[in-house]
Amino acid sequence: MNNSKWIFGLLILLIWSCDPKDEIIPDPQSDKVRAAIFDSMEEWYYWNEELPASVNTADYSSNEEFLNAITFKPLDRFSYLTTQEAFNKAFVGKNAGHGFGFAFDATERLYLTFVFAESPAGLDGWQRGWEITAINGKPISAYQNASGGYDFQLGSSDPGISNSFTFKLPDGSSTTRTNIKAEYQSNSVLHQEVIDLADKKVGYWVYQSFKATAGQSPTKSLEVDESMAFFEAAGIDELIIDLRYNGGGSVAVAEQINNYLIQTSNSGKLMYTNKLNSLKSELQKSVHFEKKGSLNLDKLIFITSRGSASASELVINSLNPYSDIILVGDNTYGKPVGSFPLSNYNDILKQNNVELVPITFATANAEGKAEYFDGFPADFAVGDSPQFNWGDQNDLRLAAALRFIEDGSVGGRLLNTFYRANWEMIDQFKGLEQEFPAY
Image (spheres, rainbow, N blue to C red):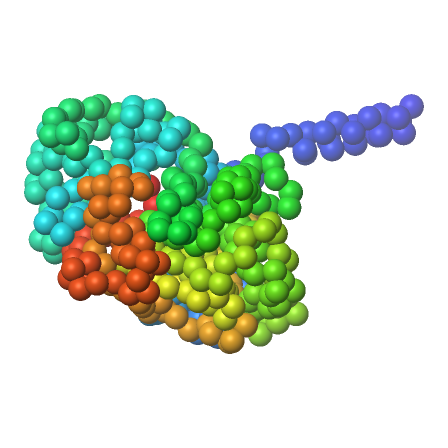
């Protein structure tokens, strides 16, 4: 009897000690978490040998301040912190916000540059080429700051936030729209068409970000498959790939695109190698092309800008040894390094829902080209013209790409249009949002 009471009492004690109310409550902004960030950086950070020998985590008021203090300057403009949910959603295009981008033209007029089809802006019919003349009742000039940049004060991306926009439409009329931020599924393919040019069929593909389709294994984009099938069925002779607003995304999707674009004769050859720090050298790998589809193009024309970064540059760099690559527009951003999330390797980060995404590897193409922190220079520098919708051949960069296909060069009239805006959207975002920039 006494023994049974002891066993029963022990069971009660065990059940009581496992009561969920007694579990440790996560504290994401704590010294313990910052110590876990530093430990993970020492293990995985590409420039781990440049980290300070020791740190006092109590000297910093936030995880973000701490990470910024220890990252390797000036090369690391990219490492960031987010949450596990936000990271996973972004890479399959699950966004929140209005769902558009905007940019200034050469005369400092502000235009919509792209609109996601299923976003609140897309469902309201907004289009690239609409001029924004006022936001929340104020003229655009009211948002300019002392440095010449702009702060449009649109609030966070949280659903329910409302902003009002006044547009001047291409037909000269005006409209004011109130738009409420919401969650939506973003599309990567903004436009695709085949342009008949003399005796050639030219594919034109506007690709906004490297996002996988949720639920696909191995990780890939069904949008990419559908676009490539479209161009294959059309029997295109040339392809213009517009990455001017593409901040990057999934390396796996970049590989998928490369496998469509590589020639059959180069299948099996080296696409790229990646390099990790000395502690993780056993994880370094070489990736080889595995030809998909029937496209067999010797030349590729990319429309690029400072908004073309990361996976966009990986595609260009990987294909460069095998294809005649022409860049039209502006120099790319300059990100020859990449990241993967580290919370799965650190229990403290995982339990506190802190996703650490530092630079963990660098890539090099088959010729060893790896250091392009200044970006790839444009072969033909041509100004952006966001006042024209996708596919309109008045678009200066599209016109220049078509002219190159026709004549093998771009005339002075188009080259004289080049300008570099004082304010560019990619510079307004940091971290995860910079990879997938949209309002």
